[in-house]
Every structure is written in structure tokens, then in C-alpha cells.
Image (cartoon, rainbow, N blue to C red; front, side, top):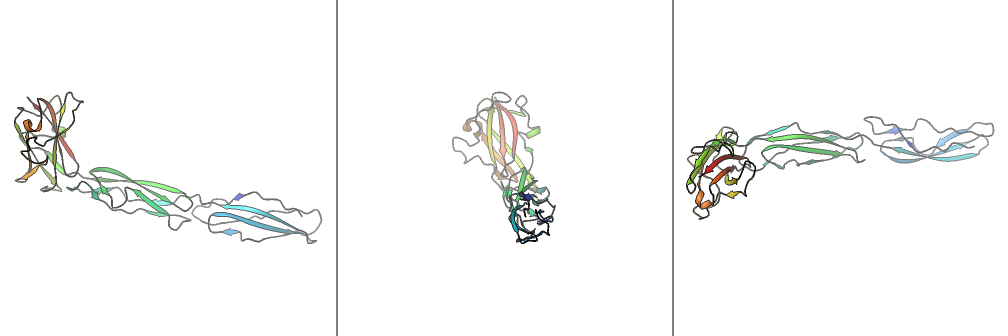
Length: 279
């Protein structure tokens, strides 16, 4: 009795199912007349992925026996199903980073507990603007899937620098058209007000920098607006009558004649710019 030697088989992929069965047994022939019977020593149904050895026994009518083995590979080829949060909107805050929690859920046809990792992770601090989060689910067989979502955090409300400067950002002038001209050596009152969801911002550390430009695109190193004569401390705005003030002493800070961009960096990390000229 000489049954065929089967090759290694990969059972067909069945979507959404983590099991497979052998439904066709190898055939055997015999050089003598008589009934051939076959049997296997292993079960033919597999509920988990893996490599299995099936042993087939064939016997003819005269008691002759042939034994053959078959390698059966059951593969998990399906990636986990991953559900990430819809795009999130986060309100304004005076904090530089705001913690945001979210849930990403994965299911898999074979692995009851696929791993899920997200970057940034849930509970991480998110800055002002739009941040793309990415989550990846991986099952025990190494199949993975990735989904993304966006977290958009609002900046503090900023209506522009108050007089005597006026304007900021799109209304803050340009290198060729600064909004105001001041005398070098003078003290420039730099003032603004900010809000969050309609309420005035009365806390936070807001800072001022000045950058000199030699043309529209060439900038020198930023200068913290800290007077070099130590008349005040730091380059932070101070709160007075619901407004944020900084008396920029152009002489004590080291500013010189030319075109300057003043930048206010609010405590939430948002920045606002205006162009001035010193003569």
C-alpha cells in the first residue's frame, strides 16, 4: 500500500473565523485487490493558528500498513479591527499643554486581547493647534492595523496689541510697512488683552521678544525684552487693570535703529507678532 505524501498545506482563509478543518483526506492505492481503509491519529479541526502534524494510517485487505505525515499550517492573516475616537476639539486654556483622554478599542477574530498603543498616548498634554494622533492594534500573530484622528486645541483669544502700537499678525504690518515708528532710546508701552471662551485672561506667564530684520526674510537673534539695566525683572508682561503691560525700554534692552518684529508668546504657547520701526 503506497499512499501519496501530501505537501504542507495552508488551509483557506475564512473571514472573521479563527478555526479551520481538513475536509479531504489523502488517497491511497494498492497493487493488490482489496479494500483500503484510512485513519488519522490527530483531530482534523483546529481552533487556533499554528503548525500541526497529521499522521495518516492506511491498511489494505491483507493487513499491510502505510503511514504518512502531513504538515498543516493554520494562519491568522486578518488584522485587528481598530476603533479610534472621532476628531476631538479642546477648548482654550492658559496652560502650555492640556491633558486629553481618549479610548481606542481593538477586536480580533483570533486574539481576544490585541494590544493597542497610541502616540500621543491618552492623557498626554496637547499643545495649541491641531495634533494628529495615531493608534496601532497588533494581534498575537503580528497582524496590525493603524488609524489616526485629530485633536484641535483652541488658542487664547487675542485681538491685537493695544495702542500705541495697534494690530497684530495679519494686521501687524510687515517689514516694508511697520505699523508704528518710535524713537530709539524711548520706552514703548506694549499692551494687550486676552480671553478664553469670552472670559478675560487674568493669569499666566506671557513673554515678549524682539527680533531685528535687515530685510523681509533675514533676522538677527531674538532679544528677550528684559532691560539690561535690571530696571525690571524678566521679560514677562504684568497685569494691570485687566490688561497685560510691558514697558519696552529700547535703550536698556539693547535695541537699535531699524525694523523690528515684536513677538508676544502667551502662556498657552500661541504667538502674536507686530512690526515696528525705530529711528
